[in-house]
Image (cartoon, rainbow, N blue to C red):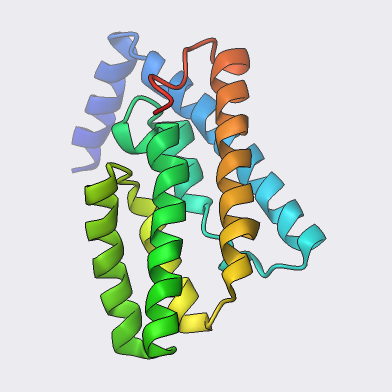
Length: 170
């Protein structure tokens, strides 16, 4: 078994298949910098990091920048739409466990209808309902964070990777 793994690694090296490793290292560095910035902003704004919903968005936008959910419309729109759904459900039902689950389901539906499907944003309605978050959560950290992440991704992909991003804004 160990020999099979080793043989596969040797064959990969012989094929000179380093592009994937280099691309992965660059994406990992970008994600680490973005997460570090998010942690710093969390401390500076006195928001607990667990309440800031962008870690998986960072992985998607930096690691798979060509994917449809990694485009600005989905990134920003998905976070806004899902947070609005969470706030509406919280307002209608209160912080019930079943309501949090329903909010996530409704948020997925809303992302499909608005063409803003961004899977990492699915955590927003759960956070809003489960933690009874105020409406201001929509502006900070959600809108501000999504805009900052889009700006970071734009600079990262254009200046560091020397690749176009996004493929489209809307």
